[in-house]
Image 1 (cartoon, rainbow, N blue to C red):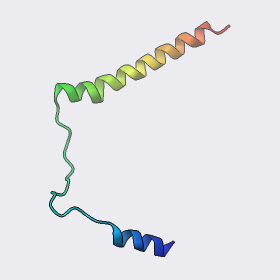
Image 2 (cartoon, rainbow, N blue to C red):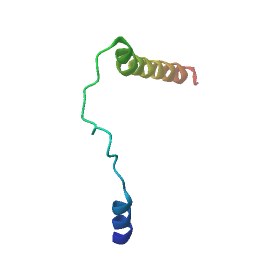
Image 3 (cartoon, one colour):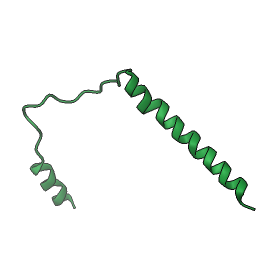
Image 4 (cartoon, one colour):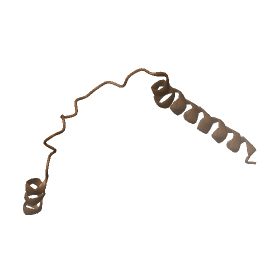
Length: 59
């Protein structure tokens, strides 16, 4: 197990000509607001609504 992790560590390559990624905050654009806030809330609300409706139909 130690040998396999050592081999993987030695064979791993890191890119040389690319800048290292840094933690950047998500920009507040209308598309990002829709994708990361509005759409997930709508999905959760739709799931709860469908779930309650299906539980009421069962006798």
